[in-house]
Image 1 (tube, rainbow, N blue to C red):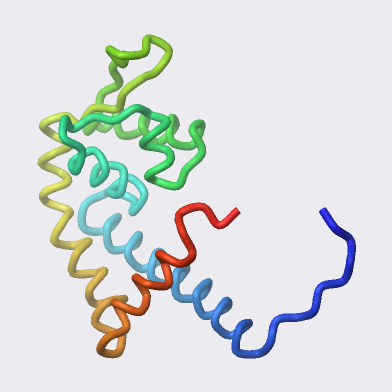
Image 2: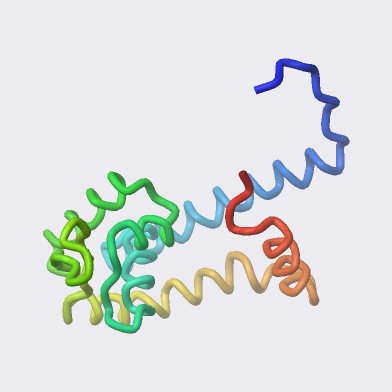
Length: 152
């Protein structure tokens, strides 16, 4: 890493960066509180159930699930263990690669996901989407695309 001095960001750029950080933290914190209170699920647990429910088979390799949930493999593994203890997912051996494990959505997990989904969607709309000026969703989607999945 270079030790040369970089010029500071201008005020508008710093405001955009801090606004992103504050908004993300506030929305995630509020959604997490709502999901915990209504469904005894953390937002991260719900997102893992969402990723599994959206997969064709209801199961994903732990490495793919970790990538989709933006978690380390060890963090995802601990979360899957908690979801398994709750009866919402099961671990299985990957048939294609004996070194890999799968997380598989159980019927109870699918039911809990369906029950929690309206709370999540209402919260995302109320806390984020509905607060944006008209046309902003398309602008944000263009920005996310420009930023890409891997900023490094």
